[in-house]
Length: 312
Image (cartoon, rainbow, N blue to C red; front, side, top):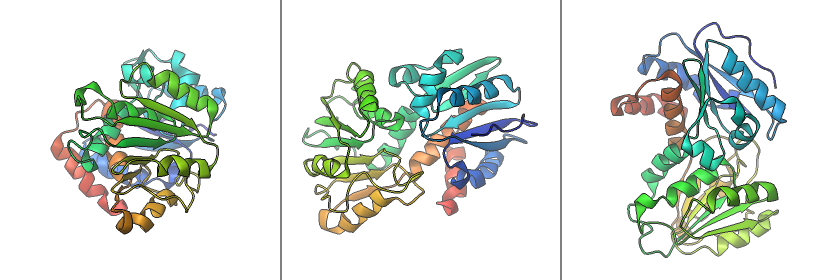
């Protein structure tokens, strides 16, 4: 990991693993014009997955103490960033504290702020493809492969009390790392009234068994990161998806093996398949608004979507 030089103009950062491959690097200048941000810049900061604490602390320290470094969007490192740096923030929003993750870093004067935007942005993305009242028959599961920040946010949104009875019969969290799975238990068990199951599956074959037991019409989510920064899928090619399932690949770029596995069964199983493009749009516009202290109007959002469509 190499820190960028001191900012010479108002700058926002993208903290990830392979940030240079993201479409946002080309899209951001166009969005800056739409949002009337002025002469600003977006820079990537790449760090290895599960980097040492000192790496995350050096990134936060740099942003905190560089006047023209205004904030950042965090991906992949959301939970690790929170655990390593939570004491460095003057304010952490309730979602960040509850879920133990950071997806947005911003400043309010000389105060450093941390937010977890995923419960908002993942929710907006899901609202676009999950039919209204999809869960009211209480006969469908939500199976989330992965236990990182996005996974916890998705579970929290699906189980929110505002939905009343329109929630999954059960939410299943599947992960290959025991410590990360234990962390998800600690974060979600006391916050969610929907029944939860947690499964430690250290092979794709075990993941297959979980997915194949899901009821008709269930939601299956790839929140592992596989197929984006690292090639692969949490499932084998032999996994059989449930009929009428909603398949959400939360990545929009990369090799996307999970999504291609679903596409092969789409017609036979009547699958609804969604990639991560809307999640990408909502995730970035929410954090940009936080970093630059602007309101994103519906007209502005529509213009951002239109300007970005050629990069999909």
